[in-house]
Amino acid sequence: MLLTMLLLASCGSVNDNLEKMIPHDALGVVSVNLPDILGKAGISHDGSLELPEALRPIVDQNDASPLCTLLTDLPYLGLNTDARAFAYFTDKTFGRVILCSLNDEEAARKTIARRTGADFQQVEGIDCIYREDNLYVVADKVLLIATVNRAMEVNKAALQAAIILNKQRKSIQDNSQVKQVIDADADINAYLQQGGLKLILTKSKTYREIAQKLPLVEIFTESDIKAYECHLSLAEDRADITTRIIADEGSDYNKLLEATMAPADATFLKAIPNSMDYIITMSVKGNNFVKLQQIQQLVAMFKRLPYIGRIDLESILASIDGPIAVGLARDPHLQGEWNAVLAAKTTNPDMILGQISTFATSMGQAPEIYDGEYVYQYENKMIKLGVVDGVLYLKMLDYEQTEGYAYELEAVRKVFETSNIGLYVNPQVTQGGTLTYGMTDHYSGKGQFIPTEKGVHSAQALLKVLCSIKPAQAYDDMIDDEDDVNSTLGNAIDQLKPVE
Image 1 (spheres, rainbow, N blue to C red):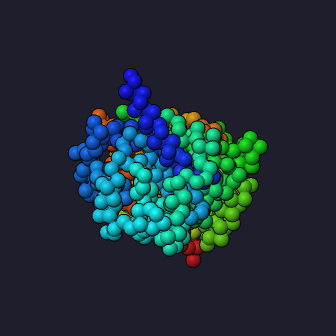
Image 2: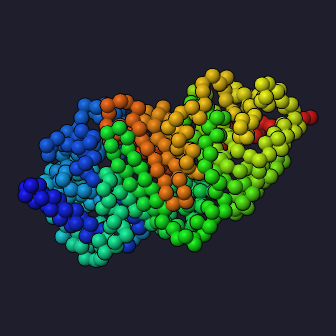
Image 3: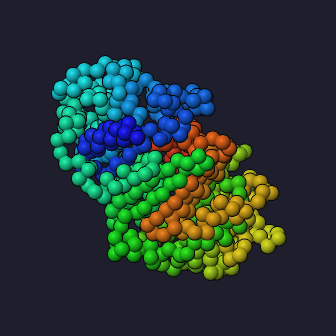
């Protein structure tokens, strides 16, 4: 018992040492419980590190992935695997800083020198390598990896790193609110100020494109929310995610959601095939929702579209009272194409059906009515409109649906029954597990990742999924997929011509 207490005290002092290097005004902080994660993933064994057989194939197949590079180097980095690792974000010299405790400084130097193709040199009294906007420092049993916000001379970056290592300023330990979050009993804890979120998103081409085409996202990114908390806990059969939005009761964010959000309702899942790769929903009071500045921007953009802009989108949105959802799946037959289903609980489905039918007829597409559905043809896809339990749906599929509906998936249904904002990701997308997430109120959210393969710990399953993500997909090049969707819809609109 005495030995255990001494070990815990030792680890605690190492963690405290690293926390003292994090500035008190950091825009975001992430704490990683390295001992627990490595143990649960089968990487750590009695103090030694070795990549398990289950992870080796996926790491070998994805050597361009930064995570796979880290896993490959992990056994040789000389890390102190009894201590936590930390990352933080700022808008000052360094945009991102990673801090790890070391047992073997020489091992860390050799591994980093081999990976970067450079040698450590003494600059401003510290051992460092400066490569491609990244500064690598090994000093006092600490590994510091920092990414500069703007290009600079190595001595300036090294001087700032020396200040961090010498703990010459107030630290995150002086910020009780943040310290409580990052010290929580979870495998990964994160605290991100609204300013930190903006800093990260403004560097993302993907986000800029999404915000331009879907301005509704700015409710969360441009509001008076103060900060976000996130905790990830890895259990044997699942990974649990909890999030919390920190905002005042009288904030514009809270007032906005009070006025526009409707109660959760999973009925819309009766219209969405269970084979969809993604299902996303937001439950709204349409008459207030349509008054939002962001929605007015969307309506204005829609009105400028040729031909289809004649549809009165504003009245359609105003009639929604409950979930509005979309299901998306890659077209298995045509590269770059998507199958899609839209569903919305509306107070006036007949009005909407009438508007769409009138528009389509004016374009020379009088519908067939089969089994209560309006049926249209577009290239390789059948377009069907109908109503089920007050939910209006539009299916754009390139096959005759034979599979069941997402409502029959109990785990998915339970999430959407209690979430007025929700997300589902099919295991065929992650190739490792099912992901669900829902916000149960304006502030709280819960998610789960459940491994597909039985008997595999969630930590190992999650690492497999993350390793398979290519760097381009994780950042700007994700927009290629976005463009694919917009291209599909855009081409469909472009080919709608008036009857001669």
